[in-house]
Image (cartoon, rainbow, N blue to C red; front, top):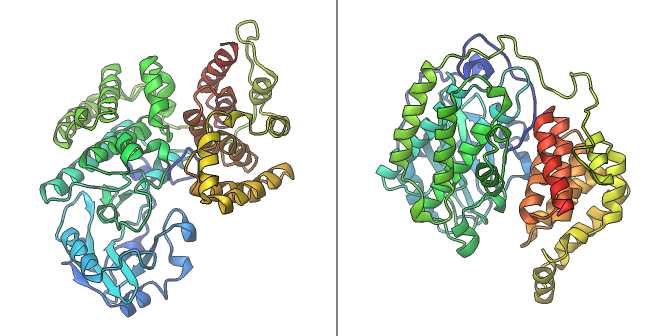
Length: 496
């Protein structure tokens, strides 16, 4: 659920998150900031509050496509609420659902978007939480244009999230499912809060990691289990997002750490806002969270202490290199300047050349001719077994339709079909990811394209195609230095 995508937010003079927040006075609660006690709502009350669960009130990032939809609503007393509506049969046992909701509903913290109620009627299961009017961390971290989130605020987000998790741990809630940038919300004064919805997970909801398996903890990949230490791994992914301003698979980031490519990893919008020592410390914290063995990951209390020190240091560090009037980096507003490279130092294949020139038509033709050669040795055996079991015949139809749309240059349809295929596939296809990456590029969805290219590299580490496509995506995002680094890696792979 998160990516590098650039959309405008409203600037303001402060150095906190408040510059990028849109505050609508109509979003204020009429009864002040106090959080009411947990209670059960009737289905009719929530139906009225959401205007009959109107599509116009959907606030889920995935809109109607999300498995469980979140609506905004307003109660009779004027209080704004967020209502999560589960899929039918997600919680077959009504009493179990209410029991779990009551347990979460007893929590009251300034670091949480608190649960204030639930509803269980027939097959309907709904949760009611405080409404956070200023959007998600994903929105402010990835979808900016004029005012990127500052280093100090990113540390505050990390620290507040750690405090929220520690608060939940103290109350016996040790699991938080699918912690990511979409789970962190901003209240009406710009403070980050952790959504309470991640504290409840039905065993019929499906995957515990809805973002992508490339970001899931190793123990989940091996055994399909989620343990308290899994939350720490996800917290490490969150730190990567905050540092880089991108959604980078942990394996890819760890390779950068080992190669000491710190500047490639760090968000260039943060230049001059942190010391080398603080950067190194945060990277060290993230790598500890991402340890393969769960027992080697730090506890949340230690993370709180380390992040608290960093936040205090950030308050003292002078932002001497920060431009007071930052320029928009939107690809739609900046004039295009063709990049140059020294071919004596870097030899590129025809595909690498096409990516460097961002010649999307040529890239399309080459990917079409390449076919599924990149998948050999990656998905063949598993795919054949699944076919023998008769489990994926319907899913392969999505891939066939996607291939046909890709061939016909119907990129919107190709994205839809490939997305359906990937959501049901047990083994990731690097080729499908690279093809969808190009479809996203053709649709000016550069952040989504970059995520697919990175995930293709995770699925097939020897895939130079994925690295070259990363370069094209980074160039579209005006990240020329990072693009050159990706080109060098791709060229090295081909030479090897």
